[in-house]
Length: 334
Image 1 (tube, one colour):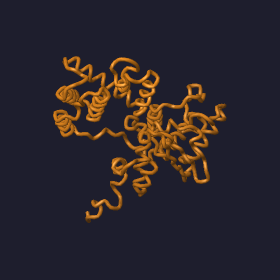
Image 2 (cartoon, rainbow, N blue to C red; image 1 turned 90 degrees about the vertical axis):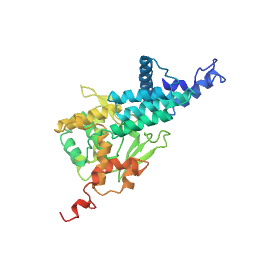
Image 3 (tube, one colour; image 1 turned 180 degrees about the horizontal axis):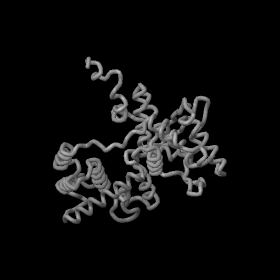
Image 4 (tube, rainbow, N blue to C red; image 1 turned 120 degrees about the horizontal axis):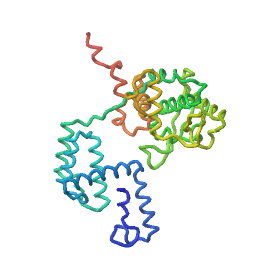
């Protein structure tokens, strides 16, 4: 793994930590690996293996690699049809690998920058986005859920809490029961760690009571807690959202991030929508779109979704404001 290269040999040898004792060198490595998420290290590892495989096939050195080698690699990726976002991530993996190996980093060289800029201009960098599951679509989806079926009760709570909290998939499945506290005003949800909060400073998000019982996130959460307890598995002290086996039994293990996408796709398909158009992120983008359409300010949407900048939010809210009161096409006398 790329992360392992940051520490070198724990003892002996000429590694960067050769002067430290084994236990201390190991702890340095632990903290260095914690600088990025495990998922990021796995992605870098896979990307670096691909790069090394390509270099071996072409008879080129991989670490350190020359700028010409890296330029040739990303050109080959573009010709093979890889998305610019994938090429960008592989450049990042190559860059990190060279930094950790204390080698000259070729990714910032003029040759690489020129090829990368050419790829962006010729291929574009717009990501392929899934459809937003806005309020009207989400209402249609949850209308088909049966409160007598345990999995349906869980999924109603998961979808509505995820939507109203503008939660990322990892944030949603990372919730513990203690992180959702019901008050007179609604649910106070504590997000202990997120993509933009790797230091786990934490944030609280308020989920107000809904106007309609079937789409109220507070009542949906309350219903899931009661249903799980009725099934003999009190949720207190453990994960908020758990697996349910084919016998209808609630497990002790929390759902995985990928489970959110599967649940969303299964439920939208049951509502007559194309599941290929949606993913787990559709809840978060759907909330931002619906809030923008309702005239909610960017500042409030950013606070709910914990975006750090208006620029990051812009792609989410643009669709919700295409036909707002300031749209000039409706004000030119046509």
